[in-house]
Image (tube, rainbow, N blue to C red; front, top):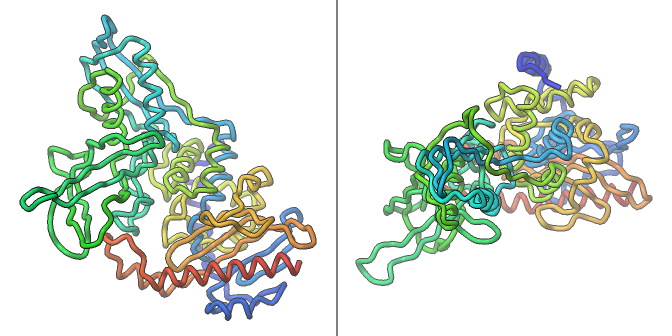
Length: 483
């Protein structure tokens, strides 16, 4: 199935013409007002819908037509749509290709590493490719070592409204490795006059590899340890950071990779050297039609990857899976905004009686303060996902167990909390639900004051999230016991 871009734009234009936010409505079902007040919220900040997933009957609701920030709850419809488009058995492929002739261990031609958008690609996957290459007898390449990222558009970050140093706001591309994060280590000099020691590593489950695509420039100053620097002619595709050690900061932390294709190629070259295969420095390129497939690495099935996304909520994985599915529908997709629109459109068209006014998904991960969705729209997407997808939902929220019988996708941003999925009541009924609480004013104020060099959220925002989780727990208890 392919949905042309112009149809998506027409659909979104029609939706935008409708009022984006219906007036608040009172709740039906168990009385929630005491729980909301006890946790320090206004009823205007809370929205939810509790429903029978089979009949669609609504059993309880509050502001079902008001748009809220979905945060990572956006991953649920993204995974459901991707499974429908690509199929649960879909596997992402990373490949090696060769040109020229091989003789006496020397490849007199080019070696090309091509990314297929595998969200789970690790150093171990690259080592598997190198084992197959070594089995062909290759020990040296006289031509070029190219990396091909043409399968997907490459972006330096998921959301421009996040801190530069946020390890969850990584670059996105067809050749993404070790979740596109690197570990930065530093140590103060052992004696006066000696330099600060710094290092950057690409880390997987079995070890770490120096990341040669990252350059760190030492500096001084108070307030921010890291600032990204503009690339120079010598490292136009690399990453450069200015590092100013701050009092009390940790000796090791995670930072985002913003040039994923180049980073993966450098790690591959390092691993090749360890395997006894000499490669030239990597350069961007594409696989020519005359190239020969030399090695292939395949990911686990999409159903397995989607379950992991719904449990661990990795933003990069959600974006890569969503992009792959959207480009299957429309190969012209170039941005995450376009991709989210294309992937959401089939579900919207399948539920014409749902009021889609106010829906705005800027990406597939929910990492954006600008995305919006209503509880009623989330209900329609949960129903459209179906039992097979809902069975992939975890019984936990950010690593903490949810009440027995609750399986859901959680979402958390500063001043925004969400949870959507299914629950089993004390009477044995299985119900669907979508819960949101957002403080629009405080989030907007935080965004206006944001310093992109600082990743930590304000203490008051952390306290707000503690209260929101307590409200979430109280409402779940109310619904489970009362229906």
